[in-house]
Image (tube, rainbow, N blue to C red):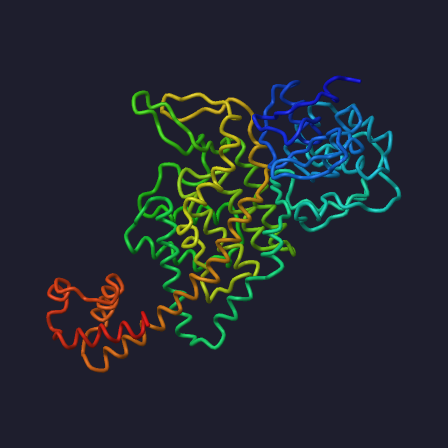
Length: 514
């Protein structure tokens, strides 16, 4: 028996194992790829080992199995183990298929052509490489789900009669991120927090809801710019807000993405608008040499046609199915920002895509804007963490050199890094933002406008002030906990007496604070 199949380890990728054991499934495949083809890939959040003990248990990082679960001494047995216990990792599977070669895959399939795992491997090999092996179609047999719905969220099902497989992958060969089932996601999906929006708006004044939507629209637009460190003139923010207000009306296409970029950028157009023709990265430059210091490297320019085609086709597949709308928005919006197909405007369009998909799939209604950027801005460090979760796993796997114009030139093939990845952490984050939006941001905005109207009516009942001055007065009171300072009164409201100011402050406290 080959030593590599029975070797025991206590550390893997710098992480201590809960106890000494043999690597199994994807952990074994990662080791094989590193040792035999010098290929390093992003590591799944949880891996598997086999120990000599008779206790099966799990830690945050490891699933520990007993000797009776041990795969046979060949790589395909570890593939079967992974499909059975760990789910599907398309990136590791594709690389492992390339390592062991077509002949060994064919030999295994032909040895047990009706076995459920041989059929899964057969389907996945042909699907990933978009080829057809010299193996006859199956003529009979029950259909087997490709992706285990107890492990990962399945997409709409399409039967493959050739393999007797129910293909329920939530994507296409050109773009197919996956999301693992977790207790947190299951809780969000089962409680259907979306219903809280309608409950909160029932019996509310329609004009108030309309004004709330307008305020939220501008607030979300400004928040999306603020996330990028930009504070544009009000008109530019309003124009982007109008675009957000139209989300969900037009199908998502390349031309629509390019139109949105023009709205985002405003009057100062880039030299090269639309899909990038050169490479790109997010990061800094060395102060002395101007050498790039990337935090995120965008997908190769030559790969963008395939990646964007895959993203748009996956979007069409999911948004016209029963796939969860938040998971769909995660897949498309985060997939877009990781690919980073534009020279500028990627972040704001990424957040626009969340609006678009949630509206298109009926999760939110057009008469109530869903200010998800405001929720993200409130949790900006968590947002940066979920973006870095993707980038940090890939930055060292991309070979590059600096160019004369201080950009980067990518030297290795990287397309699959942007096609196949896990989005579980991003999905949990987006659900948290949705919950925050529904339970706090929208109710707070409605509550504020109701109180604003009450105070406005009281002020107007005994003082004749222009609407703009009343608005300024309430904003200044908000800024200073209901008190109008002497300086602000002298600068803006010299026509008010001390008694009138006292009455206004009393009313503010009664309405906003009590």
